[in-house]
Length: 287
Length: 173
Ligand SMILES: Cc1cc2nc3c(=O)[nH]c(=O)nc-3n(C[C@H](O)[C@H](O)[C@H](O)COP(=O)(O)OP(=O)(O)OC[C@H]3O[C@@H](n4cnc5c(N)ncnc54)[C@H](O)[C@@H]3O)c2cc1C
Ligand code: FES
Ligand code: FES
Image 1 (cartoon, each protein chain N blue to C red):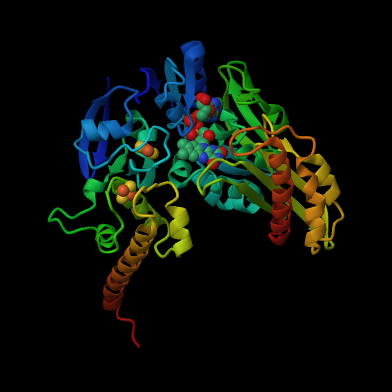
Image 2 (cartoon, rainbow over the protein chains, first blue to last red):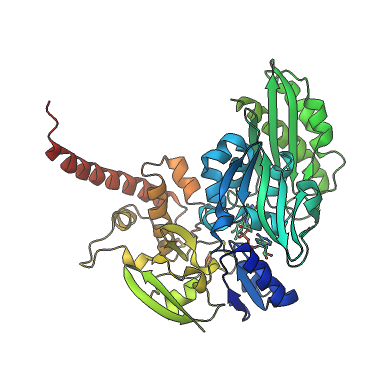
């Protein structure tokens, strides 16, 4: 189908984007990569009056080193994020997760800011950003603010983003020397995750010193598996059985969806198994 | 209506489009590129794949206005003007990379992009690299064989060009 008619602008600065959104009122919508929005428009599940395109705002594509953090512009594509040397070095989990999204064509267009703003609980990037304690930078009519990943995701397709605000960047604390892995379980090769687990570990003296585990599609928002993270601390890095056992609790206490791809019980089981695989591979990937 | 300028299959073109016009519809209905087809409504099938500034994208999931100022390459620009097939087309022909042919325009354009990203992929890399394109007929084996064969053919001819460029430099042996 063809989308319902709308107006379109493509400003060149964040200020102009914010202005266009506030002039456009309630039905003005940001378009970034369009890989979630255009399918929605084609199926006429939304009918915005105005699309404000980020494609000419060059500053939003930058990926830069900011001391202890990496700052990834909201318009950076999944392809760009997955292949960028800075991201691979300082936040390998983010690069690996970006490389697992959709298919090559989707990754050339879809963006990190769009993925996070869209907040589909089955979307991959949220769990990785949460696991690395990332935060989001937003700019709106009342200025700019930074929101921690854990506060950004509020509910199913719902974030802390106020109307008129634009996500401008994602800020990720550097995790140099950590090993990481994104383990995604799908029904066919190219599909949304039934469940997926983002894991990052720091190993010291042959033992896990710190572990971070993010869960995809295990609730209405991406989640952290705090109990499993605790259980992993002190486990011998070479003892894969012990690593798997410690990670097996990752699904406990969660309330995952019930749909044709799996029941909540099945998903909780899957989360434990996938967390084990992710942690073992993350330990193997430690530099 | 918005006026857009784009270079389509090496020719500079302009078109008047509505903001809601999808790139695939502008290509098919206004620019004569009916070789690019629509196979789904969900951005899944990849039949509409074209190169936008050299990158493979699903033209049903890009607005025509978003392509303003860009270069678009479609399946119709692959063969030489004299009809000589592009190596990827030749390989699909020789290795039974198609049956009904509906997925083929998208397969070819994605394969061209894949081989530019990675000129000598493994079979596994070809399978992953073609994940965004669906085929209801072939079972994919012929497609994978064709992409592998094209990679071989293109790197052979690239190698030949390389040596013909390198030789006159006359490295004394
Ligand atoms: C076939 C297919 C398979 C896919 N598979 C996966 C998958 O496996 N995993 C996965 O995670 N995703 C998948 N996706 C979704 C893809 O990752 C999208 O790129 C992503 O969800 C949205 O990013 P975008 O840049 O395309 O955003 P858009 O489609 O442009 O926007 C999505 C929403 O976010 C808003 N928005 C976008 N950018 C901003 C911003 N900077 N500030 C404020 N609001 C903004 C828009 O208004 C819109 O509501 C798939 C999509 C398709 C079509
Ligand atoms: S028509 Fe199916 S992906 Fe574009
Ligand atoms: S040849 Fe028929 S869909 Fe691929």
